[in-house]
Length: 247
Image (tube, rainbow, N blue to C red):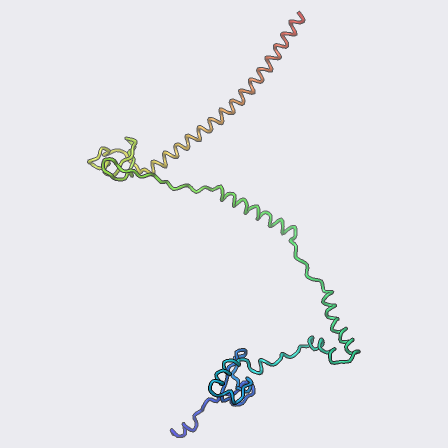
């Protein structure tokens, strides 16, 4: 049984993809990635020995099938026909070959697509909307974070993080304990008091601005009233002079 298996064992034999014959040495083509024999690569038996074999295998990478010229297509054959025919045939073939060119010249190029008025109107509002959005984004002001300068208590040496609302001064945590002088006083954080004071100041400034605006309007109205009084005064004086002249 063992001898039968030895006789029936199959040995892989390289076959050339180009000529279909058994190849003692197969080389992979870098173009088509097929295994071909040395003959298809243009190698002779003298190239398969020592350094010459190594040089040949490294230098030759394109098989004969890939190096063959590409067959001419129908239009190329029509263009190449005038060189092989007589003068009369050359004239006819030239006319035939020139015909597609003339046809191609007559075909108008595709015009550039211009936006229609409706599309332009549709795009214009979107652009205006984008500009309005950008303007609104520019107008939005991000409030600055509240940063309070930290000072230390001159008694306990700790940060003044609290604010005594009764004494109206900044204190530390030790000042609010039993040993401190602000025990049982109403206190709050410095940041919260700062925000409240700042908001109150802004409200007062806004009220003052409104008062200034009203005063300016009152001044304008007073000036107009003075002009009216001056005109009336001139009219009265003119009437008095007229009465005096008549008398």
